[in-house]
Image 1: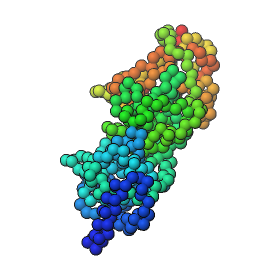
Image 2 (image 1 turned 135 degrees about the vertical axis):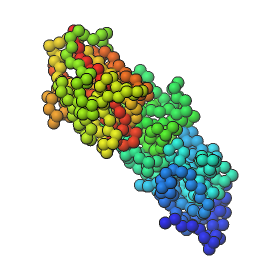
Image 3 (image 1 turned 90 degrees about the vertical axis):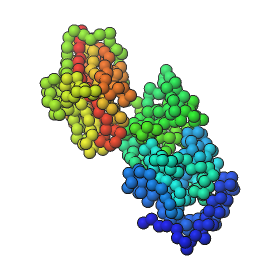
Image 4 (image 1 turned 120 degrees about the vertical axis):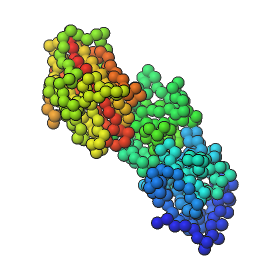
Length: 472
């Protein structure tokens, strides 16, 4: 239940305001008065989790507080390295937090006063809570927007305690990303930057590439089968031109949303929060013979899904349609308009399934690479907004064709094949190119493996068509 400061304790409240003014003028290391902090704690009459309950109950609509409500919190952001600008992120506890909020304030170098781990008290009277780019945010209301608290008013609303706590990051997985984790200081283990970002021919920076306008967005992958996610870095940060580390390990930062509220992302306080060691990585095995000049005259396998039934699992023609996790197989579909299918196509879409994870395989019949030569694979893909889902095309020459042995086989990524990306236009069908398979030996299978979820952002759609394997 929310409580309000009454006239009977206004004397304490006046003392509280005096302390705020005193603390706001003192350098960081001068705040040593633990007795004052104890007095402040008596006046705490709500908590951040309850405040966010109001936010979600009102579905992000702006709420202005006209009564005295005070909550305590811990600072988990820092603008010292320039990756946060006039945004102070706080959470309710130093360990196992339940709630966090972004506080907009017109104040530069706030880390000198509200440093990482600093316990603070926030007086909500006169502040407004609303949605800013998909994130619960406190500030002052301007129209329907949440704006910065003027610097002259910051000390009225935010007071430092003497305590500077050790913040324990909340260990999560990308599959756990949800709205209640926004603005929390989190940690993800066993991750690495996508190999295309770390060489060997080019190592990307955090945020100083030619196409980085406001933020550098870098794909981070899991070594444990978790979903990939985006790490965002401001182009104005002090470490924007620093090269990405090539190894693997853990990283920690603030879970939030991108500027356009399209996806979850992590912001670092500093590059020291990326704790990758050495050059050890967990990249999947690759198989490549490069690209061929043209397809062969002999067709070993082809399918355009014309004979399939719409909204039914793809079957026949030797296909193996295997659901590894979740409940959705590859299905046939037909669509017109801006997102048209190629006649009838195959599609994987987990939306509405309720599945926390969806992994589905569509595998060709077995191909004999010893009795043929000059084998070439070609296909087309479209995303219809891939979001955080992804599609791999793989090859195995040691799978026995039995579903129970699927994960025991050696599956290798066909790295020469192009697969439609989330930033490709959703209505376009992208060619794989002529993927040379002539260096394969024995008998093998080509597989299309979708990974996604019914969770928001990860419930993207992939479409597949015009698959052909040819030989000379």
